[in-house]
Image (tube, rainbow, N blue to C red; front, top):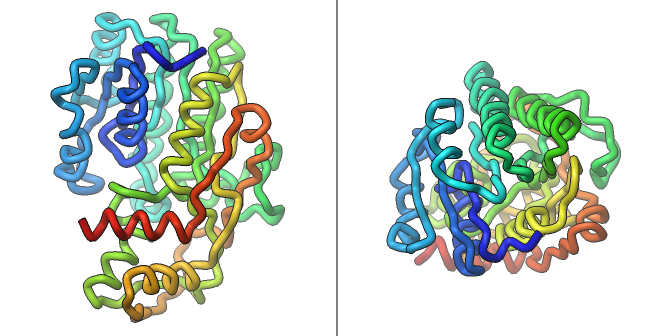
Length: 318
């Protein structure tokens, strides 16, 4: 399935990853409909800015609404013929999910069920599900493989994403839908959400404020540049069959302490560190085994964290 000339529904398409995907799909000759709630998890004005460049594009349509609103979904799917759905809408973040676990299950699980059911009713055969590396929990085997057991999520957010994967499998099994699940590993880049580590650290260092570092800085993360993630999403739209889980990461790690130091170097400033205890729900390491995505999707990330930080800081300073 080529994505060129297709009509794609992106849920959560006003967000960070969704807006980058929108740009890629419009540039390659597709029609894009975005469904987004513009909730207040972070400033809705930032999401409005994300979609502003597309509003006058003839092949773009924006619908504001909730993925749990079944009458809205029925109207949306009835009026348009979607070739594929990319389901990115979710309540995001590990730490906030500890404070609002019921909301996370409602949006991320019930909302995913509503999207899958709408796709089934209207004969959309492919739904790409945006999952998360958080489903691995404190996995002791690294790098993380899609075949690893993921039955012990350590946050409500992680549990909600694993539940979404299980729903995806059931819709494939019952109705023959293609539902690839993409486990994103700490995505960053221009327009990244402001509470995410790289954005937050950059802002603090640039402004001369202390950088909050939870734990001793030894936690390791597999940070993935957004352009590489978009390559993987588009490849899954084109090539994935049946139910299949794919890791999309950079397949290299950096400690949080080293990350802060590198950001300081790119900014030309010395970070001030404020050390706080490790937070509940935080995992010790994320590290993607991407062999399956390489072999089956042709996924080949090209932007290492040093190059990515330089690009991010250039965007931030603009």
